[in-house]
Structures are given as structure tokens and as C-alpha cells.
Image 1 (cartoon, rainbow, N blue to C red):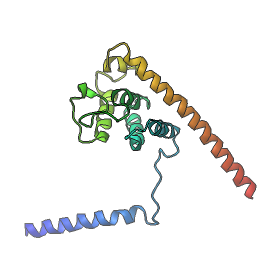
Image 2: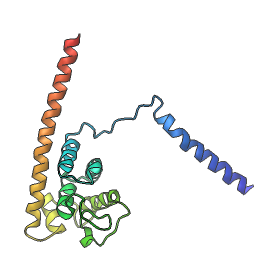
Image 3: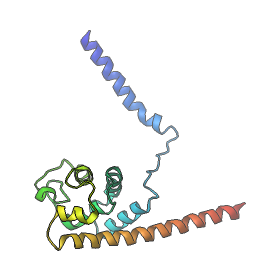
Length: 180
């Protein structure tokens, strides 16, 4: 009897899993990410691609973590840029040099989520400014200014992306008006 219950439970779970894509996308449309039009995502993605970063595909993860943990969106990618040349040189899937790079993560994505949660919610970092977090993260005098330079570059790129997005929306609206 117990074995029959296990088989039935597995069959129900398998059926549910197999039917999920059909339930989620009945028309075959893949929903767009909420970050697809986010100027931060555009800027970060462009920045990482310009640097030939192997973690460019994780730009959205940086934003998800920053938003979830109340972090400045530029903090994690700026640290990763300094610590691992934006994912080019690292060990243990640790692109942040967290714990002197001795902490191993199962994936780079897990590292982003873990380090972001620590910088946002641990007692040591919670409630601190960008600069205060950097001073705790790495106390060397040269470190914070170097991270801030990267963050400033990201800010500039985000502003440019926001301007392009606004112009694109205005052009789209004016084209739609002209069609009528």
C-alpha cells in the first residue's frame, strides 16, 4: 500500500511538473523579465559586455539581490570588478573575494546571492552607507576609492541608458500617434 502511494505521489508530481510550462505559457509567449527595460540592467549588461566579462549573463541577478536586500545596485558588480576582473579570475565560484576567497560557492550565482544577503542584512553591514560597507569589506586605503570609481562609471552608464530609453519611448509614442 505504501509503495502504491509513493508511485501515485510521484506520478502526480511528474504530471504537475510536465504541465507547468503549458500552464505558464499557454500561448507560447515567454514573459519578459521585469528588469528587461530597467536602465540599471541595460547599463550593467553593457558594462560587463564591454569588459568581456564571463558573468555578463548574470546582470539581472545582481539587481535582484540588490533590490531584495536594499543594496545600492552598483555595490556588488563594482566589488566583483575589483576582486575578480568581473568574473575573469577567481576561485571557488567566489567572484567577490569573500572571506579572502576561501568561501566556496556551488555557483557564481549562489555567491552573488550569499554575499548580497550578507552585505544587506548581517549585523556587521546592515544600515551602513556604501562607503562604510566598503571600509568594512576591505580596509585598505586604495580599495573604497577604486570601487567607487567603478560605481561612478555604472552611474554614468545608467543615466545614458535611461536617456536612451526615454527617447525610445517618446519615438514609439509619436509613431503610434502618427499611425492614427
